[in-house]
Length: 163
Image (cartoon, rainbow, N blue to C red):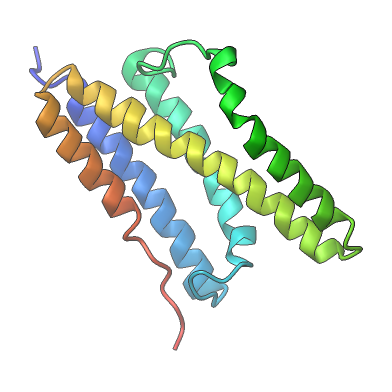
């Protein structure tokens, strides 16, 4: 039996995730001529973030047979500390929609959706799939370094801009 039955598929899953982001950044930069970090990039990248979130769920289910990858059930009482953050987001969202500028309001909504998707999918891929999959096959230190390197490589992807 393969000694690393979780680590190798986890690494391939992370590489696939990074590839989707690279295609998104290429599309934003080369196809639409956007420069990083132009706010309107979010209108292009939100579709890639949706694809990345769905991809993360599918890969987690494929590798582990479920999608929670070591994350336990949500402790709703532990989320109380997020209340100020949600309150601040609600105020900002209200202010954005009361400006009377539909463009600003739409941008804010897409940014919020994208932020939620980014947080969900990155955690699922790098802490869930790579870290949890790796911990089943390799030492803790090695897996932490691998997960960190994969996460860093995701963030090295920048759009190709027209010159």
